[in-house]
Image (tube, rainbow, N blue to C red):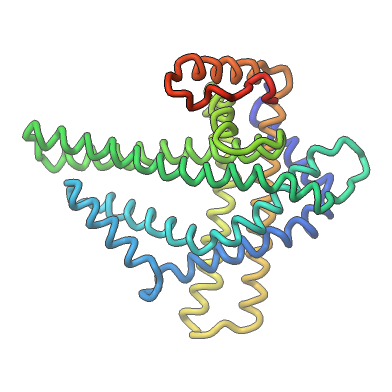
Length: 325
């Protein structure tokens, strides 16, 4: 197992080695997704968008659950509402352009030839199906992670209220701890989702089994996975902030977007697409580092056999685990 710095160096080297292909063909596949994501964050705050409805629904849910009025929960509610609204807006571009781009990147990384050959439409389509299945399962995993975090917060505040503790300092401590817990759970879920997509692309098997195998692979290397995800996500957040400052702010001040502003916005979306490609390469290199000299396949099969033996309802009785990769 390689260390995280070596994986990052290998990922950057792979990107630079295939620089012309990644920054021309692949980046234009990712570009519609990047444009939709950046524009969604600009359109989300408008009163006519879906954000106010989502925000009010979550606020009513928090109030009904008994969460105390806190600035931390207000910010958390706002961020969750923005994420939901942006995800709905970008979903068509994610299910098409982004997954097709990821499939082309994974096929390129699986080539063992020194001369790069562009992937065919047939190979991309064959890899698109498992990626789509895994992405749909990832969405349910993210929803489950959010529900789990809010459920734990609800239990904590209910216990405190039932014991009769209502001091402001204790509520502030619980609110801060809840925000940290929510961030940790969501970060781990996102890391598992990225690994599951890379795994399903590399092995050609999608769905919930890819998520389960990703959990088995990174159960002892979670800190390394988080460290690898940190640089790219910081860069993506910085590009989003740059788009807000240079494009959205200029549009609100001038009241219109001129051709130079539009060109600058496309260039920022181009930069965002490059880092999305790098993020996919890092996930694939992280997966390859696990496969070299690792017994994770046997551990995964043993885990599934244990599930099969403990299952009394026939849910996975007919699975042939020996045929799994």
